[in-house]
Structures are given as structure tokens and as C-alpha cells.
Amino acid sequence: MEKRQPRIEQNVRSNCTKAGNYLLPSPASTGKQPAYARMRIFLRASLLGSLSLLAASCALQQPARLSTRAPTSQRVCRVRTTAYTHTEAGGRRNAIGTRLSGSNVMSAAADWSRWPLGTKFRIVDTDEIFQVEDYGSALIGTQTIDLYKTSRLAMRKWGVRFVDIDILEWGSTERSLEVLGPRCRNRHVRAMVASLTKNSQITRPF
Image 1: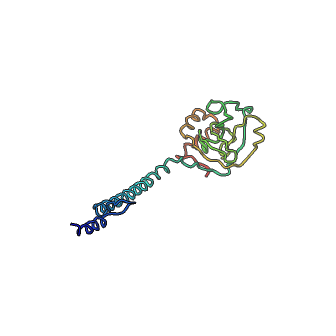
Image 2: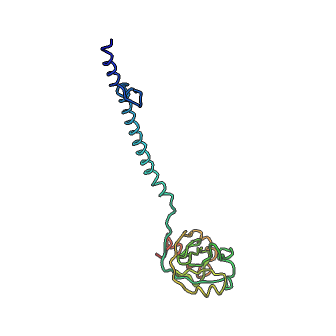
């Protein structure tokens, strides 16, 4: 028995790793090394799978973000504009019977066969927003838009300007004809109605 003791001790030492003054079993001796390898492979595969799912999710979500953007407004260049005010013949009421607006969305007059009632636009240079809700005999047959100003001083200061505008919303042909229909005794109103009913689409300056 004494002769075999060194061999047994050598076998024990070959299957152990030294930690300080203690002998610890090595992974090879316990049969756990293949389990560690399988665990590393599993974790690596799980990480790659998660990254693939994240990339696919981002690719699917990108079109949804693009589809929620507001549509781009339509720009019309070099539109001739003039100005008017409530101290002129038309008074403080517009063609649809409401008060002229000089703030936020401001009133404007135009030929409704070119710029239908309710057309909303923004002047690029000044960032002011107007809405067509009035008309005038001098505007019929022209592309000119008459902008409402709250005083004669502001009206004279504006004068005649050619500006670029962004159409935010086109007005309604049907609503224009509804308002103009009972007023066809006036020559300029008849001209607008004839132009509106002649074409299926409004002639627009672009």
C-alpha cells in the first residue's frame, strides 16, 4: 500500500488545479467543459437573434414614420397682390356675410374662378396666412389677390407686390357657386359663374 500512494497522489494531482494551498477539480475531470462550450454557443446565438429582430423591427417602423408626415404645400410664384381696407365701399363685411379678419387667418379677395372661396395660402416673405372669402369687380378675369389690411396706412404701404405663396388648402368650387348663384344679376358675378361651370376643374395659376 505504501508503494502505491505516490501513484494515487499523482493521479489526483493530474485531475486537479491548484488554488492557493488547495487542490480544486479541473473542468476536464468533472465533465463540465462541453456544457460551458454549449452555453457560450447558446448565448452567442441568442445575441445574434436579438440583433436580427431589432434590425427587422426598425426596418418595418421606418415607413410608418414617413407616412405620418404632413403633405407638402403647393407653391405658386410671383402672384400679383394688392390691398384693401374696410373704409372702402365694401365695408367691414365680406362676400359671405362675416366680418373681415385682420389677424391670424386674414381675409383676402380674388376671382373665385381662379382662387375658389375658402382657398387658404401663406405669403412666403411675410409668413402671413390669408383666406379667400371676398371678391371684387376689378379682380374678375385676373390672377390678382386683394389682401385685407386693417387701415388705409397699411393698405397704402403694401401697394402692389408680386409675391410667392404656398397654397395650404384649396377652396371649394361647389361652395363658390352656391354663394354666387343668387347674385347672377351682377355682370362680374355672372362672369365668375360662367367660368366656374365651364370647366370641370378650376383654372389655377401654375
